[in-house]
Image 1 (tube, rainbow, N blue to C red):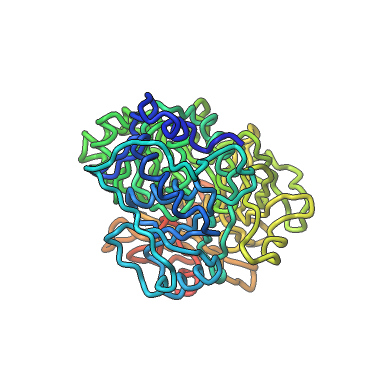
Image 2: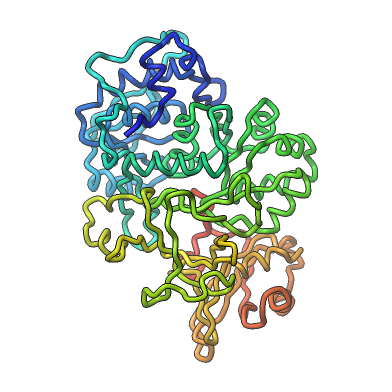
Length: 499
């Protein structure tokens, strides 16, 4: 297999060459060129090379990026740990993944759940670094490392039980990033800005490893702020990655922030992921900036499956078409392929197959077997429809967003988008609850724009019925101050259902 990071490999081989002086990583006022990254990561890789698996305390810092790169150079699987996880969850992950040690920044205070692990500090001396060749004992990122060698073990959110560790091979990382390069025309000249957490696929694999594989650079905001987005896009950044919560804040800020609008208008690509971006926010951003946000669709277990292409139609409410190398189909509950899969109406579960898939759930052969069909298709649990030209529209999760009401299969996502188009609605979520007559009735959870004068339930029902169909109108409406969300901005619907 070719190296995961050609520019870094080149910098290791020729520390005085052109590649070594290219900007690689910047977090605030701290940065590393490819030569400096090589000089920092290669000795660390040599130090951890005998470990079977290592944990990384994944704060949004330069140290986290260096730690993961070092693990990949050494061919050692990295387990990113969410610093916001509670002690019981961290204890489960450590017991399940059995890392030999944990990498962290020198000033990080680690919780008691990690006390049993040997600690290695990622020490980046910004003032005293000198580029140099890798340790002779290290053969960094070389072809002999097999495609199926694990690169990362990323733990799922665990909404239906303890988190499961998805083992992601190097082959999946490389093929996903190369497929996105094809879809987004992503090159080494691009400069990516984002403020995403680094313990998950979006922020770490796409947002850090993606630029490094292209030989480009990334500027991490530390924490998301619209002022940081304005600053970096004005200063030459070409791409922005975010989740819907971030783009919603951008959309809310645009009317009073002409500098932000101008900066977003300069961007080559605005990408949203991890959850559906409401159509209303799409339109507000496009109107103010002249740029349309594109969406992509992926999971921990599959990395990226589909995307709107940079040279395609940026159609709001869709996640585009399958990426190169990815097969995608919609299936009925009995496993049969949906007959009218391209009619834009027939709902089915997405199943995917391709080199982007994980290899297994760590220590869970039962869960791994249940996740795949006999012929190798991964059951995503996501429900979607496909337009006649192949564009995919996600309508929700099978477990929480597929509502069977009055003989219809209804996706919660399209109702949520319709509700958000109402001027009196700031945020919306839709669930189903048992109904003796309909089987399930549609329930809307609304954050009103004006808490003193929220739209009535009948007004919202008529609003949805006018835009979609009468059988898709909500029968019950609850009003909330805020919707419960996880660290990636996804609405936690199980918390709503048990409110």
